[in-house]
Length: 103
Image (cartoon, rainbow, N blue to C red; front, side, top):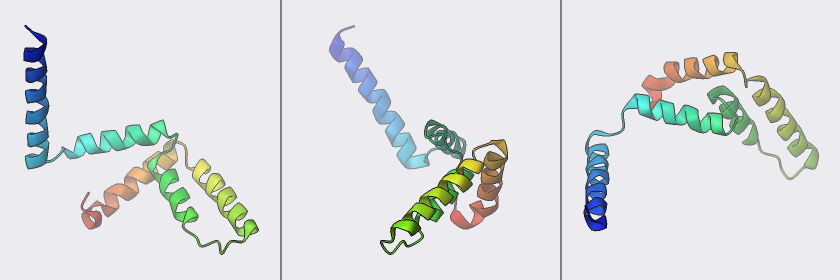
């Protein structure tokens, strides 16, 4: 086989996969697996990530002590959830809210 033939076959396979994903979507199990891998790569789980992001949304009004408090509180609470219990809590919360969020 020549290089052009191999390249054409690979391009066809990728195109078929893209068309399948466009028409039928990505299976829910794959989405959850990818989400877990991404969170593990960041050193987080679902609960710790959500808590830290919600704490960071508290308005600071450009006051340095409030910013320091937010950062410390986010690290303490989010860090406290970086364990199997936090992972279970995140999965439970996700399964309870999935009818409302469409996930």
